Length: 404
Image 1 (spheres, rainbow, N blue to C red):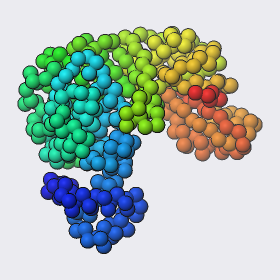
Image 2: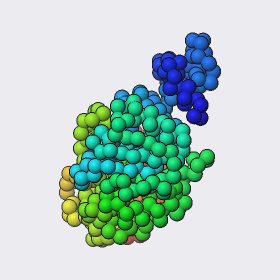
Image 3: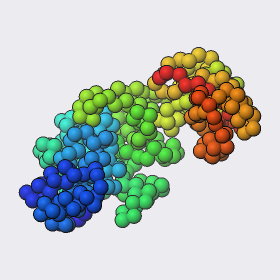
Image 4: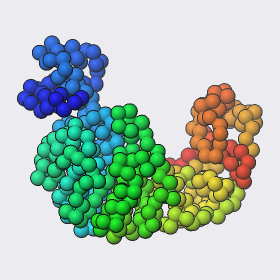
């Protein structure tokens, strides 16, 4: 889509095409296109409307019912912050006293809209003209155009003295190809500009990739990793007066309708990020930490809460004598600890009539699906297999999952 096609969608004829597309979206695309053309919608407008209808359908998971009136690009939707995460961030900024916020690289406006809903005046800056136009349209559709305005331009040229807070989500994909950029120095805006914002604005938040190297975290910043319903979705750097702890793992559980305003449950684990957990033998129960805990280097803090130990200092599985409930890890009961041997494992599973297995792994080079085929399972029982290392040795644990 280009600006001309987007402008056409904003006309009365475009609105009618969008309504028609919404009624036929989700089925066969050729049939849907034929239906719009037979209704008199020009081919170009029909294609643009059907693309928007499909993107809006996919966006419901991030934006809830509000997605039905928003505009998206494929790349923009993929990179947009989930509604529950954006809303929690906005609430934290508002609680810190932020009244005006610059959203540098605002994309389609997910974070800016959440901040505006929290009562923060947001100035969005977006380099791509089409994305900037869509963000402005999304603010209008949400009834927030008086609190969220967008300018198309260079984020590095924005006068941050106008605001008391900055949110920056640097582009981590190559323009034109959509390929991921793994070197922060190649981000847009560049990494040195992004990290320098904290020295210029009292409240600065930077959204970063979950795989960020801890060595790149600025001194004094709080690094937070966030998962939603068990999926690791992002990391953020809270700088200046916003930094409360060195490392934080935040787990969000969305309830029905959470994206549209109902509260999501937030659970947080904090710590230094450099503590080391004790190492011991495997015990009766295995704890598989949430990815946010692992990425935040807070496994040692979780081990202390659970009175648990590692069986290998480089692998983030914890072992304890009790099935202690925790939102930060899944718990499995260990029935067998075996040095890995395909022949022995296959014989044991056959003896126990195990026909269905869940395969987890950390520290193992084995491919789960190939192992599943090689086991030649048959039977009506189920088990969980954990492929890992114990004191450096390849090991398989046979487990029973426990209720959450």
